[in-house]
Image (cartoon, rainbow, N blue to C red; front, side, top):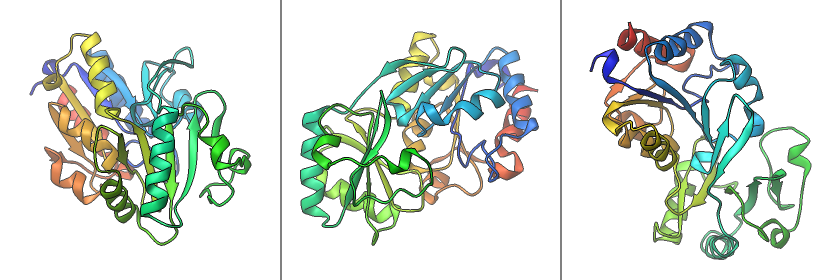
Amino acid sequence: MSAGSYRMVATDLDGTIVRSDGTISARTRSALGTAEAAGAVVVLVTGRPPRWLSGIADQTGHRGLAICANGALLYDLHEERIIGVHPLSVESLRHLVDVLREAIPGITFAVERVDDGFRHEPAYRPRWDSDQSKTTVSLEAMIAEPVTKLLARHGSYSADDLLAAARLAVGDESVATLTHSSIDGLLEISAAGVSKASSLADYAAEHDIPAEAVIAFGDMPNDLPMLLWAGHSVAVADAHPEVLAAADEVTASNDDDGVAQVLERVFS
């Protein structure tokens, strides 16, 4: 397709346009700007919560929309405020916790909440060091109100194996959306039907942009729904094997400005 055929650019952040040092290169920022100048809507689509977007917003000029928490939150980057929420209900949370604890003994839980961020039960071990990671509550208190994401870990499972076991236990996709975006065994669970693709499709429809006019970039399983929905999908070179197999095109790695290389070609 020509540059004029693509009306939306949707890109994941970590592992896709964010480099290993946590920054977005000047080349990639310029390429995103070139796409916007050509008339494309640029949307950042991430598993991150909004509180982890301040540096990204600075690097990308506080423009446009971010779809956060794997589709559960819509975040206005210009005004830095949440403008849409698709939460997991308390009923769903309790059901998921009961089913997963029975099927996978030793599994531990945390949640992302709209109002006050990250909470985890005492047995859960966060993999990052921050004040947020020290906020522990009982499991019952943690799931007593709707959340944007239920998170789970197990010390003996890889991310792929934990996802497979959890999907087998939960079964019906009408219960919840299960995925992962890491190699360290973190399971990410959203409300049924909520994914990067669902929120991106809604936003594209609001702008009268069909899926075939969207080019999307990603690297991990939580990107798969978005990549399968978009008219043209691009995986970075070091993406998860399932993503590499599903993408229409494979570009260079995030550290080699793979996304920028494609945007420069498409929008030049």
